[in-house]
Amino acid sequence: MARTASSLARPWTVQPPHVPVGLAGFVVFHRPSEFLLEAFLLSTGIVALAEMGDKTQLLSLVLTARYRKPWPIVAGILVATLLNHALAGAAGAWIMATIGADVMRWILGLSFIALGLWMLVPDKLDDAEAAPVRQWGVFMATTWAFFLAEMGDKTQVATVALGAQYEPLLAVIAGTTVGMMLANVPVVFFGDALTRRVPIRMVHLVSAAIFVVLGVLALLNPGAA
Image (tube, rainbow, N blue to C red; front, side, top):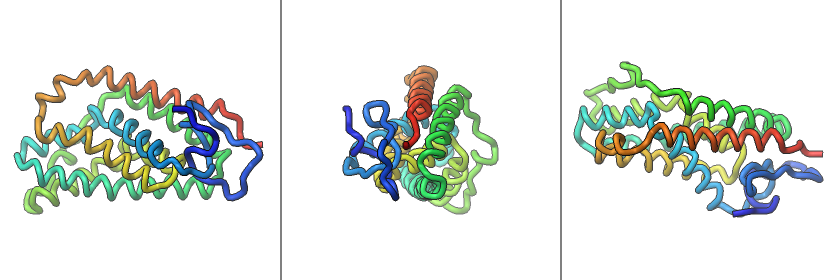
């Protein structure tokens, strides 16, 4: 799905003579974007892979076992993800606008590589994160617990990086949110029986490889002339 330098990512304030491109147009920096679908699908795929076996997915299992009310849990996950990823994506876009594309190329490249290595580390759910406030009701307890668990998590960091690299920001937020729901909703409805059938280690290896490749390509691309 090759694209030219006019496909993804954010526009330059002043257009440079050379714009780096890599991985069939996926690693690109600051240029006009008309292709919403690519930003959406890339964000969806990266976050869905990163979420497999993540602590927020483990939290979904805990909440399902505790409350056994799937629809309020799903609604809470959706609201928490939208709020969290909107903040993360906006932070990424602000960082890109503040720092500039050439410096951000190095930050993004190293961040993607770090995320790839982080994917190989098994996640654990802290007792405090696994104990939502019961008196709030299922929806509010899920929203609060999931929002807190997502702070500083792999998928939030990935959303910051994606928000810095691609536009429009709404497509990125929509994609990362869909990715989170694809990974968590089946767990809520089918529970541990589903996660035992998924080769989590293999998923982690694949997602780690994708992050590292994106990072290396970003670092290898020359800065704007």
